[in-house]
Image (cartoon, rainbow, N blue to C red; front, top):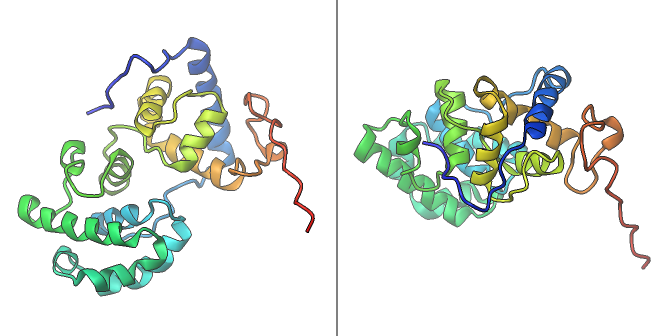
Length: 232
């Protein structure tokens, strides 16, 4: 299932598609080791970790899950967990009330509808509490090797906009735009590459344009100025 097209989304130009074709090999060379940073040993752990990663760094999630995954080993452990206790176990990831509720209800649904197993289709994953397309794409690609779309997180969103690959702000619209210009065999790879670019070079507040291998292709290169600190 792919994101629905809307009349407001601009059509992809041949120039944008050609730019994507140039960007991918440059990023593959620069970030050859790019891969998912969330620690996990099975699909359930990846699902939980990805839910926790919303508005939180992967580094912080990995710190939390190092203990969490020892305490909660089975889907039943989350489904039967005391909600207040689970909230405290994941508190430092932020938005812990909603995340704990979603994880608990998600695992209940896994037991009720999927025999305690993480499903392998986009449609079934999207029915789970706390799971949107980003999470579903990450789980499908990294747990099962199934590629149905492109995972759009905060880094992919920011970098794809700066590179001029999309004019949209909505993650689903951005995903659709990228799917139109990136070859399907690169859909899974492009997420990891753009995430690494956004994490280590194209930072939100102060992008390192002078270090970026895409500076000659990027319409936003060297256009960011850092505001001086206010004097006390």
